[in-house]
Image (cartoon, rainbow, N blue to C red; front, side, top):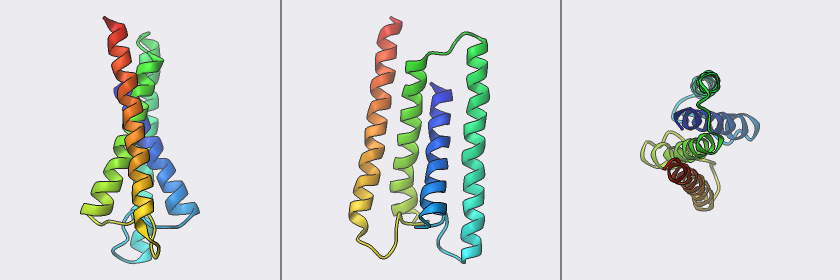
Length: 138
């Protein structure tokens, strides 16, 4: 489960960085300074997501080596990690810390709702999968 959690966190952070920061250019990880600082913050964020994803791949390979891999439990961790990261980003980074918004110069409410609802759905799917694997263990 922990390997999946780390993988889900890394992949969603990676997708966030590529789609919202680079392709759509809606924001940087840190938007309270110059564009140069924004790009540097994006690079650090991208490195974090890359290392989380690659690190989890090594842990996953170790699970396979030890014959301890359980796909449903791993997927539960992936969904939980992805949703937890997205909800943390949407509530803590966007609203409390105000590092950046999803998008600027638009009505942000629909974006916030969509962002946090999707995060919540990912968390629920992850929890359901993890609960099901705990019931199968018994």
